[in-house]
Length: 327
Ligand SMILES: Cc1cc2nc3c(=O)[nH]c(=O)nc-3n(C[C@H](O)[C@H](O)[C@H](O)COP(=O)(O)O)c2cc1C
Image 1 (tube, rainbow, N blue to C red):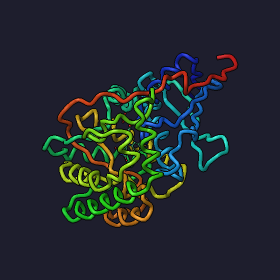
Image 2: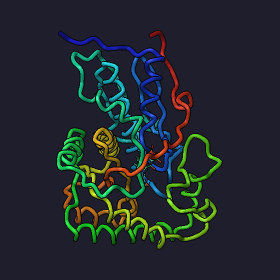
Image 3: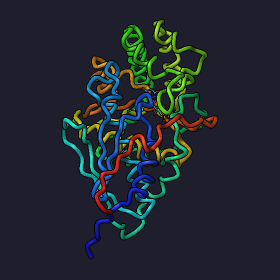
Image 4: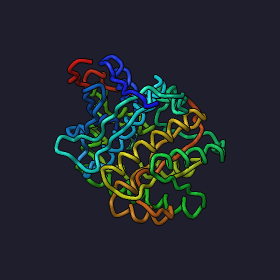
C-alpha cells in the first residue's frame, strides 16, 4: 500500500525544528533558517552567520546544517514519520540546501532510538576517561558514517598520532598568527552574545575575549590540543568522496548520526579541525589517514569524566518562518 504524504502543521514543524537546532555547529554559529511550506520544511543556509576567515568556502557552515537536518530526521522518526530529503547539489542564490517531506512510517525506525541523545549530546573538549572505546562502538560509528555516504577512518598507529600532532601544531600556529582569524574567533566568543557563540570555557583555562583578539596564543593552544589528541582513546577522520555542497551536507548528517550513536553508548566527542581548516595541511591529513576521499572532520572520542552544560541556542521562532497556505 502506498503511503500518503503527511502534511505538517506549524505546531509539529516547530517541534521538529526545535530538535534540529540542538545540533552542533561550527563556533555555535547556528547558520540555518527553516521555512515551513506545503506541509514540508525547507532548510536554508544563513550565510550572514558565515565565518569568512575560518571557513571561506562555507564548508563547515553546510556541515552544521547537515547536522541539524539529521536531528530533524531523528525527531520525525520519533514521531512515527518517515522523512524524504531532497538535497541541493550546489549553491543556489537563496542558500537553499534541502527540503524535508514526510509520510506516516509503516513501522518504527531504529533512528527513533537516537532521539533522547539529541538532548544529551554536547561537545566534550575535556580529558576523557582512560577507558577505551569498544570495538562494537567503533563499528557502529563506521556504519553510521557509511549509511550517510561518508567514510570514517580510524587512526590506530603511534606514527599516525605523531604525524597528526605535528599537523595540529602547525595549524594552530598558522591560525593564531593571523590577526583577522583571531578577530573573527573573538567575535564569536563575545560574552555579550545571547543565544549563540562559544562559551569562553572552550579554552579550559582562564582567558579573556581581549586576549583571544590581541595575542598570538598559537603555541599555548597547540600544546593543549596536542595533549587532548594524545590522551583521546579514539581518533578518527571523517571523509567524503568529493568536496562540494552535497558532500558537506552528507558529511554533516554523518557527523550527527555518529555523535548521537556515540552518545547512546556513553561516548562523546570533540574536534581538532585545524589540519582541515588550513588548506595546505588537508592533503597531508588525507595521506596520514590513508583516505581516498577528502577529510572533513578530525574527531577525538572517549568516555566523558564529567557532565558538560549545554551551549545556548537561539529561540526557534528566530530561525523558522511559516509560509503555509492552508494545512
Ligand atoms: C562543522 C563543525 C565544526 C566544528 N569545529 C570545531 C572545532 O574545530 N573545534 C571545536 O572545539 N569545536 C568545533 N565544533 C563544535 C562546536 O563548537 C559546537 O558544536 C558548538 O559550540 C555547540 O556546542 P555543542 O556541540 O556542545 O552543542 C564544530 C562543530 C561543527 C558542526
